[in-house]
Length: 252
Ligand code: PGA
Image (cartoon, rainbow, N blue to C red; front, side, top):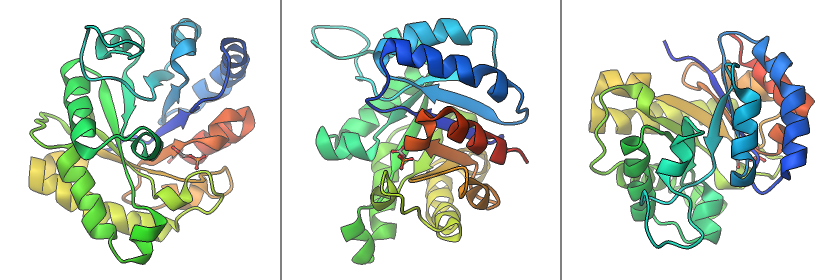
């Protein structure tokens, strides 16, 4: 049984004060939805404050990125040790990190390994660009991102990993993938690849999220798919009502 997970990726939005008011508005309505795991990934500057606000609730906290080294002379980076004080999850390999900050599959792999070592659950993001999609390279690209991103990774339990399928052309564009298409990617590419690396049992228990222009209106169609275990939500996670609506739609 995979418990649905709805993760809000706030990206480079919200000051600390804005984070406080959004989280205040989210706590009671999100706590009221049972059977769905709720996760908020604010910017680093709000983690400590949001951590305190969420104390005693079931809402989880995650980071949007991390460096792989636990400590050292790495000006401006954030370490897994520092995150582990506040977070249970960390988003790794988001397409914006890959596109704007040069993150390769090798970098993503180091981060995934480091997150696991520090007991953070990585949400590994994979997704093809529009160009790769139209060139018919979806299987090749996603298989490579998964295999390289998870190279030498050992899992004892599928709960240690989350994979998010986020087609680059669907992120922030208002043009989501079709629910059936996303499900086919999960069942036809992601789970078979995971099964090749970790065996069938673990592959079945890793949660697979869809991300890319998820809204309260289209969320239900994704969650109705047997292979999709929730969503990684960007834009709609910045609005209280939209995020609550998506979480409610995930209730089975
Ligand atoms: P979006 O972003 O929901 O705004 O499309 C999703 C993501 O980047 O995780």
